[in-house]
Length: 112
Image (tube, rainbow, N blue to C red):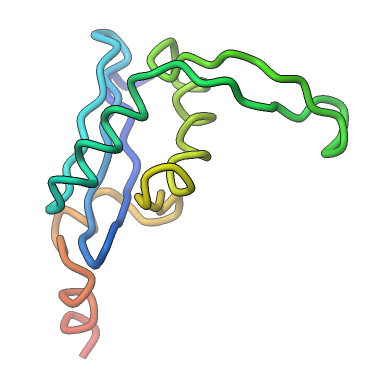
């Protein structure tokens, strides 16, 4: 497994990404929105009580999840990021793409 787990994010017209260092157990948000960076880094660094589905989508158990414990925990907390910080996780967008096009308006220009 790579030392750095990355996923693309966006917020208020800015593209960016989140990096989770699996060895150092740290998170860094790269986004041209200071409030979004601060909110996301804080949220992704704190433990959360999350209802996790078990045998079905109707069977939940509340668990304490530490996003910095491992990649699976980090991914679980990422699923709650948008509703708590307005930072949207772009699961299918490659991180290399958002590094090249840091603003949503840049993607429109690139397709013309």
